[in-house]
Figure 1: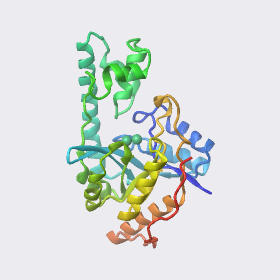
Figure 2: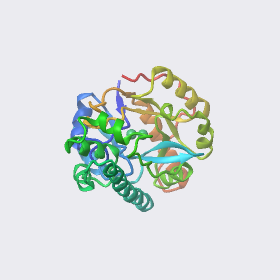
Figure 3: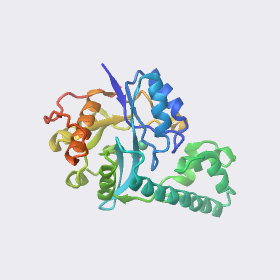
Length: 298
Ligand SMILES: [Zn+2]
Ligand SMILES: [Zn+2]
């Protein structure tokens, strides 16, 4: 049986592994396919593709966008996107700019509490275009202001704490359009963490292609629930570990491995879409029946 992990973050966003380290981990866990889904960037995809190629692992370009629908935050995973697509690159560059501003804002709030953290220290640790809260957390720990990441989040960074600054979000409908425009599939990430199933029909209307049924933070009951929703709306099923390297204390790779047949269905859907767009790629017939087998997150 072949397995895939379709959700992970490298040091090009808030993970700690390089693309090469991530791929080496994937190989250890016996993965046949991996997708990189760094926040608001596709920069790591080229290196990850090369590293996967060397080890005979199939690689899928991806990213994870922060979106919003009816005031509810959700994450949209993009798969099989063209990483040269200009519109996608321009829009994510704007999100990267806003992320950098957000770091200054968080640091200013921390400074107001008489903690002399410097933004430069955060940017040095982040060393990427998509800095985020974990980088601020690491800078707080390295600067000796907090003993560990838990303290950094509990005292400053998590929601309702003084240095919490919400992330910029794009409208989910626009996000889906952007992903489709770049030739990709749009997938609602870790829906159980949203606890807002009532936005799902609207996402379906907007053309969302799939739903992440398997995720490290989904219980078996959650996965079963979302498999039911995928079946009801005829959505693709995806899953992944959301591994951030050591950023979450331990690498999560291996905690979720999905059946490779889900990747095959995604590929068929992409081929279908491209054929319909008439760009010359042959259509691949895709089984229209909703998936019946339940995948087993490992
Ligand atoms: Zn997410
Ligand atoms: Zn993620």
